[in-house]
Image 1 (cartoon, one colour):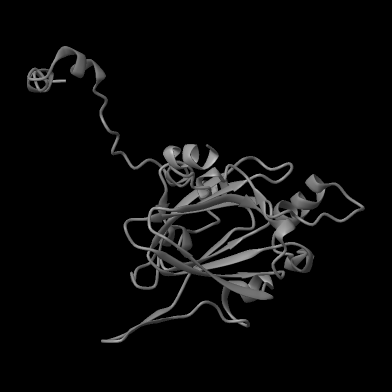
Image 2: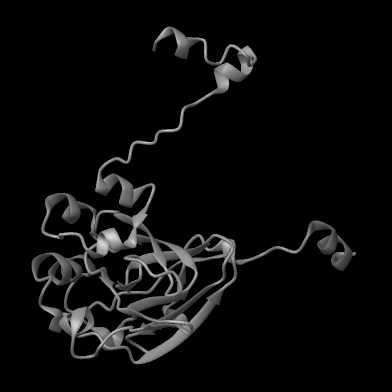
Length: 248
C-alpha cells in the first residue's frame, strides 16, 4: 500500500478504520460464482458443459436452455416455452402433464422445497441415482417421469434469482445460483430451467417488480411431493402488537 492509500482514512475515527473491510470485486472462476455470488442464467445456458470447470459446478440432471422471445413492436412480446418434438425437452423425453402459473410479489421468496425421487424397490437410492445421472446420464428412457415430479420453469415478467441445491442420496452438495429475466426484459437470460426431483430449489424476486412464472410438471400436482426445507421465509408473521391483541 502506498502512502496516499495509507492516509486515505485518516479523516475517520480509529474505531471506524479498524472496522473497515474492502469489498472484493474480483469475479472469480465460473464454478465459484455459480456456487456463491451467482451468475447470469444466459451464461450457463450457453456454457460448454464438457469443460471440466462446468462439469464440476453443474448439478446432474439440471437443464438451462435459451428461449425464443419475439418482440411485437408497440404491442409487447411473444415468448415460446418449448416445442414437444424439438429442443431440450424433446431430447430428455420430458413433456409436462400439468401446466401451472404463479405470481410472486416484489420482495418475496419461495422455498426451499424439494420433490422426492422415485426409487425402484430392487435397488438402493444411491445406486439408482448414480446410474441415472452419473453412469448413464444420456439414457433418458430410465427416468421415471410418471412417478416423480420434474419441473420446467419459465419466467414471463420481472427478474428472479434461483438457487438450486443437490440433496440427493450419494451426491455431493452442489449449489447453482443464477439470475433469470422475464420476457419483458429481453436478454440472453430469458431461459427455461429443468429441475430434477431431489434438487432443492428456491426463488426470490429481484428489484421492485412482481415476477410471473409458468411451470410444467411431469406429474399432476400431489401435495405430498412438496418437501419443505428452510421455507420459513414464506410464512409472514403478524406484527407483534397484533399477536398480543389477538391472544389477550
